[in-house]
View (cartoon, rainbow, N blue to C red):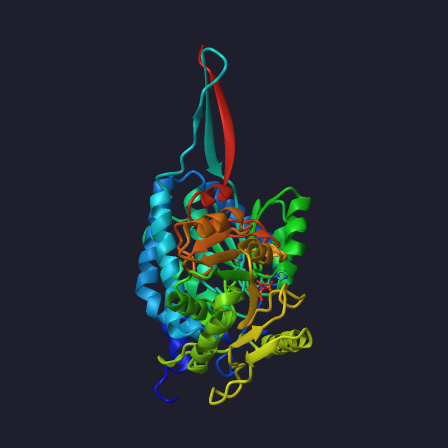
Length: 487
Ligand code: NAD
């Protein structure tokens, strides 16, 4: 496709020049066609103590900057992100394989959290509490915590950093970012944008926002360091099982945002037109590679055949292909390993008695990428493979008879991120909201995609962390209870 912007032009527009992109050992490939985009120099593990020390030095300065002034830096970051939106969005598409609207949408989320954090910088409130003693006053105050490590996954290569960084910065904490080794270029581009905001701000301390490039060993160094009081880690449950205990061992704080296995219950009264749109959007968006992707459909027997038939028809019309083309709705999986894991899961589902629709390699897509038709699998029950998160576009459909049974199925997985019900029955809706065990529970809207105003995160093996909106900022600060005797 000759009318698509060349990789080199996108990298240049993001300020990534050849000197930065060559000569290193970390090969970065585009999932679009497998082409090599860069060979980056990795941060040696031996350099991590110096990185952490720089963050501690920045903390010594930044903690004393008034919070609304810290908010000014984040306001400028939001301005720079607005100016860079098209270029950074295109780079997300190039490096992570998201379709164009999703690449741009991710940058918009960064802008939104900056706006949120600017307002927050004037609202880091504590309580005043009635003391039982005469002549005494008791209050709760919030203080900067210290360097915050942000470990991120490939599938939200830029937004997750900003969800953490915008809050951490207004709360008075320096940030050390360890992005996925699959998406370091977007991280480098974000640092360029941050540097422009910091230059306009004027006196941000050196080391306030740092980036380290490399693999799990760098994340491990951050997890182990007592000089990093908070580790916010987004990725697989496998990773969280290592990072969580490592941080806990030294009594650090962690925000764990791990795997999901999200379900939708479709009740007999559901508006099926609305449900079909929501199912397709949330099951095939980002080629099923969102933590909140819809993976399990729990449908009342009375509407199941009709709904599945409509979905199969809708899936047949989905354009799978180059994510840079405006008509594409489903881009590539991140790599061939991901495609292989999807095929293994489909084989296991078949062996369990599942009827698979779709799931074949997509034809007509660029060579060298892992393009696949999204799959719908009619399952006789919630077998082991259904209870696992396969990070690919597989939607398992199961029937139910009673709402009790549906909610039990919805909750009977190890993960607890996002859930929803489609119903026009108020009793069913409220009953579901009381009993879903997930961090996110919706009515008549799919499980995927969250507004930054709400706290985001999930229960059980999803890790229990909350980030982004509401009072998630409290995790980035230290709480003190102060009693003053003025008698
Ligand atoms: P991953 O776990 O392979 O990697 C995530 C990050 O953790 C990477 O930066 C990686 O280098 C780092 N890492 C891996 N092992 C580590 C260790 N032992 N110590 C420290 N750091 C380590 O995940 P992925 O394949 O990049 O992303 C997909 C997964 O992320 C899915 O499970 C998805 O559900 C999850 N995810 C969750 C959320 C959420 O908010 N809950 C958001 C996005 C993605």
